[in-house]
Length: 474
Image (cartoon, rainbow, N blue to C red):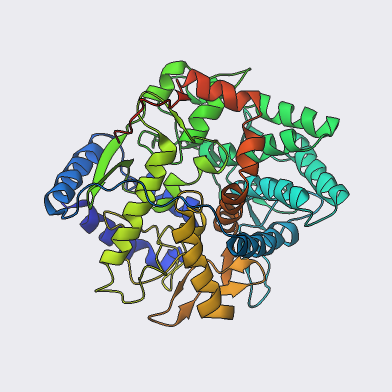
């Protein structure tokens, strides 16, 4: 039986010629259909996680350490992150169709060549970005309001959906389904988070009404009709995809939204159905998966897990620990890749010189080659603010126009091989912008958590305040 990393290497070798044209979700979806998915699921995942856990416990040389420094941002750091947010917002404003509100999946910042491909997840980040821009006065309030209205009207009346769930990919102008893509459960969840953020932020009757209509149309009971572990999606050609959201990942937002629905709620036991496998690296114990760093970021872009826990964990603290483990993992690779340092680290799913790659660690996932992915640090800003802002400042100051562009950071670069991406990807720019704002003000958390669906979802999942006696177990 092949080891997991050997299987992954074989799969990547087979599909590498196609990766340049793929983004994260499409690559994962095709891998899932082939039966080779990241992260692994079911008994196989648990078996490997146990092996990795034991291995890391055996080789760990440092004792468990307290949480990293959570010192607040300095005025200079806050001003730097404002520059990051302003630039990142430009992508969502300029790379969207103003009439449909659909946002391009990516943009080439060198050639300016534009694609007609929109990602519904990018739309979710884009709606949230408009709320931030309105609050920060990056654009006029009327402009922000009108763009959100156009987007929500289009989502409600024209963008094709099935039982309220949207297709992963759409034409930015016509809304036509692209690539025979799936009705995506997780990408719909990201979109809904953006919709609910707008519903709370804007004091506009039609925005609030459309937000209710779009969210209440989603039939979570259909997605969970015969299972408490939700499917990745559905297509009219083949029905439900065989892969399930069964291991800790960005899935938390999806389950919590479903639990919070007033019209088609998930059963309460669905929160207990997915696995929370412990990992240990360098003495740090946390819940994780065989997956890139973004799994610790996405749900926490909107849901505020600070100082709260369910029956299993404090997930905000868990993401702090997982990010610290990831940083140490990168630093431990310094002997192989000399660019990784205390001021330059971070790997998550991204472009590479060989196309789109799902990589990260620990344990090592994908063909790591010294590439740095700015949104790894950007999406972790609330977890390790001092350490991650240092990385982002290094990228902008040291690599200049090669690592920084009009939309903020390029998606990835490799200083060892002098490769610098020409593209900006919507979801990676989005997680950086949203988490930068959360690190600065908590605005997205504070706005989103006013939604009764968010509060009800966390209540039904069993969340409660930490209190003086609570101790994180991992």
